[in-house]
Amino acid sequence: MITHPLDLASRLRPPPRSFDLLFLLNGGLIVLFFFLFGSRFVLAPGLGVDFKLPQMAGANEGATIATVVISVPRSNMVLAEDGMLNYVQLRGWLQQRARQEKGLGLLVRADRSVPLEDLGVIAEMARTAGFTGGVQVAMEPVRGGSGEP
Image (cartoon, rainbow, N blue to C red; front, side, top):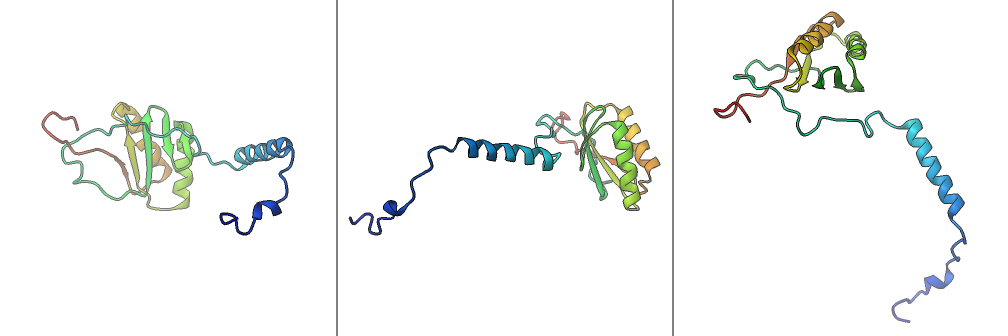
C-alpha cells in the first residue's frame, strides 16, 4: 500500500492487556517524590494582584541598591527568598543572612495596608541582626493629581 510502505504496524508487539498496576505505581511514585523533594515555592501563596505600594512624592530620588528584598502583604506575613515567614521566623532569617554576608541592605516592599508600626518592627529587627546597609521601604512616585495610580 502506498500510504504505509514499510508496514511497521504489523511488526509491533500487541499492547499489554492491563496498565492498571503499573499506572498506579508510577502515579504513586510521582506523588511521593513531589512530597519528598518538592520546593517550598510550589503552590506557595504569592503577592496578589491587589498588592499596592504606598506613594510618595520624590520616591525615586533617594533609592539605593538593596541586597535583600522582602515583601509584606499584611501584618505578620513576610514573603522572603525561603518562603513565607512570620515575624518570629523573620528575626532568625535576618540574623542568618547577616552572618553570611556583611554590609547588607534591606528593601521592604510593604502593602499600603501594613501598619507603620510593623515597618518599624521589621527595621529594628534588621538593624539588630546586623544589616549595616540600612533599611528602605519601597514606594512608588505619585502619579497624577488625585494621588491614585
